[in-house]
Length: 296
Image: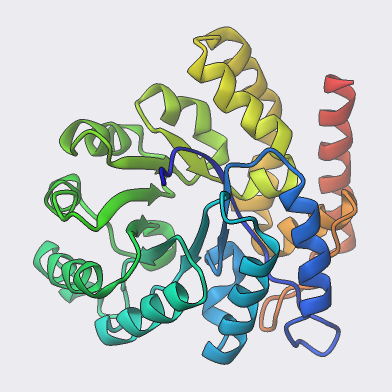
């Protein structure tokens, strides 16, 4: 199984009492499975993984695997601060049917998270994981960065198959591409710079926007693959306002509000996150309507 293409990191539905809502989850999964997306990520940062306990995680992954056909890759976020907990989660995800695991960098003890620490952590996880491992670099979230030199070393491990880079540093993305072996999947994590990342050699993306506008994200990827540079650049420009609203501007609450606007009910964010305000929802609605009008 390859990990090239467009993947959506799915938001986790919660009910009005702040519990995981499996009924909403099944309905939402039916919507996403009907799209042309390559595959799906469950329990990533957009899935509010840090706010979900292990029993809830098992139920979420189990339902996802039951709904997602086996030929569509299911990637499960399993990152924890300790190596032993990450290994435990990776093994649990594999039993539940994950095709790969996404492992974010631990960042609690930032000053001690050196390249050597990351090498020890990821090698131990990759040695123990029954399924392939994707590195997850999100410096804005964790406060630490996986350097190109560290990624190049980790990419030689036979069970480490790629990286999601959520930053917009195109020089770093280019280094990941040029310093890793052929077949190592560098995946963009920012829809705002998706076209630029693809142009720099990324082979796909794990994009919050893909769960909201899957057809457009897949089209942008296909245009770039086909060498339709001008068309891809134009589509990127039109996607940019929506991409920014559900990432840097409003985050997970904005993404969930946007999903409701397109008819996918994923409930509210889990506390302590607050729902998007009425003003934010109005801005998101206008951006979605403007995109639809341009593409009508």
